[in-house]
View (cartoon, rainbow, N blue to C red):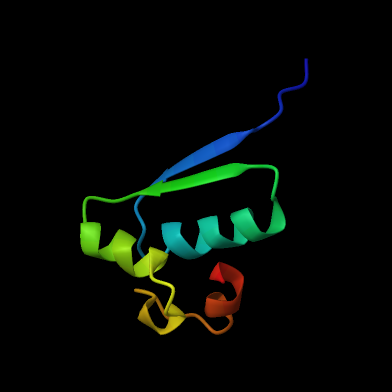
Length: 66
């Protein structure tokens, strides 16, 4: 029996969850990626159109998120 992943929900938008989900969303456009976090400001920073506001610095991450 084959299972197709259609959506992923990640709890935590910090140093691991945020960048990992950004790469999955970039590389797997057929999967709906949702990230949740208790820190609303962190989620707002990930959604900010100004990529310099990302809450995590990783070289090239701004391009992946964009």
